[in-house]
Length: 492
Ligand code: TNX
Image (tube, rainbow, N blue to C red; front, side, top):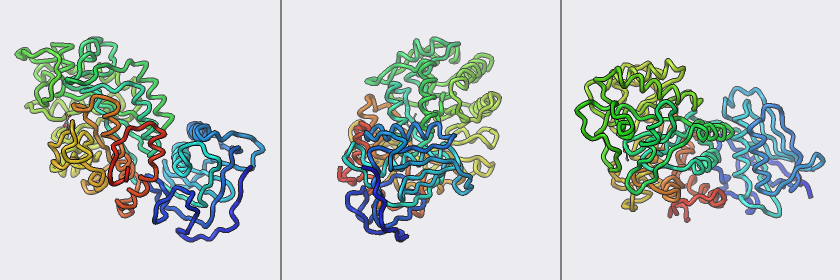
């Protein structure tokens, strides 16, 4: 048993290696997202079924992640094993906060400036290995140096129209982490439902939490569940970014606390339809709504350590809208955090550190860019995964793009084309997504393209290569239990 160091080590960029390794026809390694630099050497090295781990202090999430990987492959640990995997912290400014180096020669060496970087090195190692237990684990001789293009590599789940149980979120966080995605934006409130327990306003979940879109699931996360999810996500370097959608999309809140609506509003019931843009907090009752907004957001920041708190701001017309957004973003700032608003919020007088989330491909965001705002790029014709994997897919929307958002389209987004951006986020609205299986179908494999858009350099992206690499990772998605769409481009 043990390891077999390879005799040869030419430093060719890419060289012929054994077909037992997961790699594509043009010999790219089957990695998604593809690393910034991959130097291949001829030959292989075999990881034994018993390994010796050397881990520096500071690997508090990466070492457990490595141990999970080894356990999944029935690889055990022994101090006397010949195969060695070493994790250690370095100081290499070019690797940044999230970058890492992974060297496979006569051992496996993972190094990074941070535990986050080491965690991503482990994810890369995982993709180089088979998804299931095997008799042996041959690996390519390789020197990978890798770091992301953008700090924000996100996915939004609308859990408000139709609820997704906490167990699904956990599985989803793990799946995201495998592809180095690091922001899970939770759309926690909308007309059809309120999904997070707020102790000062119990009716939000008693009434708003019991409602959902027709055919969808009701429910809510208790504060205890949120805390558990936050801890789980932190161990996977995923930040949970909460959104309370204000001042529109608030029928569930209004049905729970009628005083939030103007006195002439007659519809004070919960709502299960598909319309948008009909409900709003009563902006002419500042003495009622602002204390409520402050109280809700202050409980929210207690629950979510995220630097950013999303206040929504989409699809609502009101003469006092701009003033509301300005006040709401300042409430967030007073709580020590930074607000995010959907693009419409750019009309308000916000501090330039407020992030704007662009969703309409045609929106004129330039004035906000000129004022120094940065964007999360989510143009609907590329990133709205409630749109079909193909034109006419049942139970999908097509209002933004008649042809739907096939994988090739999703992959063709250039996040830098919209101006200063912190990164990219795909969005799964759930008016028409009512089960875990349908959520999987809408999210995968397209979310792998979001991951690559957020990580790799635009000039390195090639759809044919991406497809070949992702196709080779099918067993990894299967092992995660993902009920993905069988994308013909991938041969699935
Ligand atoms: C637009 S784009 C919405 C959501 C809907 C979605 C359906 C945006 C910020 N809001 O309220 O769920 O379209 O595709």
